[in-house]
Image 1: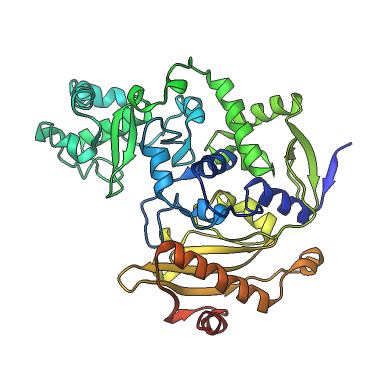
Image 2: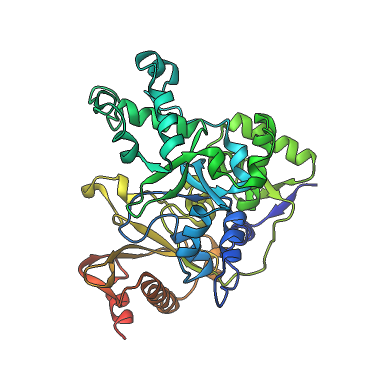
Length: 415
């Protein structure tokens, strides 16, 4: 008989699977960093730095204030525990996951290895040799060593009008021949030969077939979700849903995934066999736009009732909640959302918008929804913790800020 879970149970499963309900350690260690990344499976990388780098924020949400140098060590010093590759998007993954993604390639227009090789027959070999002899190197340092005819941007080409050298470099990164040894102070990838980047335990492993990789990737995704659908599991590593379905069938046969029913959901759903179903949760976190809990927008809407879009990719006049908007998780609900900015010049964490969410007509949600006064108190406290972690001296509400929580939050943070 298929087990039925309430929507509240499904929410709590998802929060627990993401490690958002556990007690923060008094002092965050390297073990805490690597264990958290292993639990959630990946950290998406993004260059937007209006608040903090995207990959830093999910760890703060789960661990509280931590020394970001720990993550730099994990990703940039041998033996590397965390490696950069193409997974959900540009992503950090545990070193053990890296071999599972070697078959996976981006399919962007213009990234055609055969066509580029035909047009510039010696370019791939030249880049490989430069990195072999002089790496690790940034893209800029590589192109400085290449004939200028390979480095001219072609505005008729595609996308960001990359030069042939840049396209070749991205293809070699996609193919797993080159891998970032670290990120520079300017957040540029610093490329090296993959065999020089991989830790010995990974380098000596044999190749993993695509079919076996798919099963393991869905296993990781389903563990990180706790509960979800084919679409949820596929989106985590940007897998084809047909491939994900076959992997789910294998994991279900093995007893790793259990078919369940969630009240109000019409799609087939699975629960990870080791997922916890907490009776309650005391989670409190500001979730970055690239946090794994908010990756899949349909799931977010169905679980938490939040219709969420990335403001950074929306024209300013069409934004409803701001530019860099973080949902605020309190207990088992997303109770507010805020547009935040770290004003480094003024030494302030600036609130640019603040909106309260509503529980909607669901009586189950109404029964556990926090009081508005509690939301404001907990939100102000979390903002103060974040400000301290960022090195900001204070939290301030922008005089031009808008949203129905702005006035009350301004009063709360000024106390």
